[in-house]
Image (tube, rainbow, N blue to C red; front, side, top):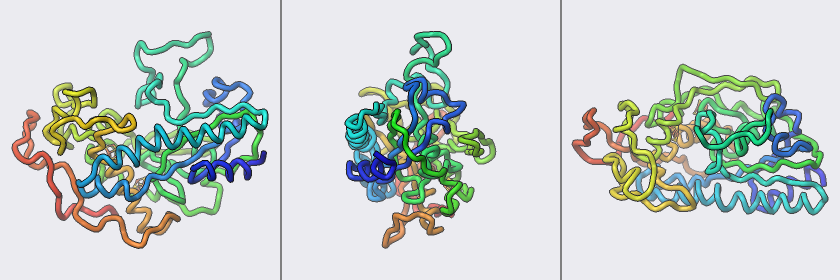
Length: 342
Ligand code: SF4
Ligand code: SF4
């Protein structure tokens, strides 16, 4: 089986984009080889988020569609099926394949990359804790699928920020793809900062950046406040409030999470759909604003007949909030005249 065969099969199984990286690119990031010491290759598959799945959160009409069809259904159902089918095809050839969809519920690290306290411990000296998990966006970068944008989102020439990623680690040797910055593809992230400006939680710093080196390439993104993102994403926190325990409306069971937030349009926490829910922010900065910016520049191949932003943008209305957390007015409103991403 060649790299070309793998790509053809993965697309037939349902992946939209496929890239291959050799294991040497994970030098300094030993996780794939901790999981499979004989690993030779990593295959990354991208699954597009439909632009139509963003329509309802853009306009405040249909929140469940992004949660279910744009997020959970891809992440927890469609992607694992495709990744498992591809892994089966590789194992039919006599090579082992570790299928990795999205197993972050068992993740030993938190959103900032620190170890979760009192969660798990290494089973032998010199190893990381089990289930530390491989960074899927970095894996996609190392398999040549695209760039890491300022927002830390994976940007691809096919879909911009609109995809989720699953991977396979295998001991099959495959021809690697070039990293995207080494190709003649257009530069995707031009530091337009639309993601920073449109993030309702101000969760992406416009000044503080994080840098790392991936396969000899320096990659830099804005520091992400994942705690703010997690709360704002569910409609729990206005832009200008400090993240205190009192102001935190983290997702939880019934009677928790958005049920207690006066800023979400939901009076009751919606039931999870495919393990996700409450996408009230709807990735307004990191996905929608970025997508609009990339589409305007004409650098995304998945082009549409009409521009995405056609009507006023829905947003939580935080204009009449008291700092003590009480909402004086409407919990949500159609915000007219919102600034268009540049
Ligand atoms: S919105 Fe602009 S700065 Fe942010 S990731 Fe997209 S292209 Fe880069
Ligand atoms: S999901 Fe929403 S709150 Fe989180 S970074 Fe993206 S735009 Fe900001």
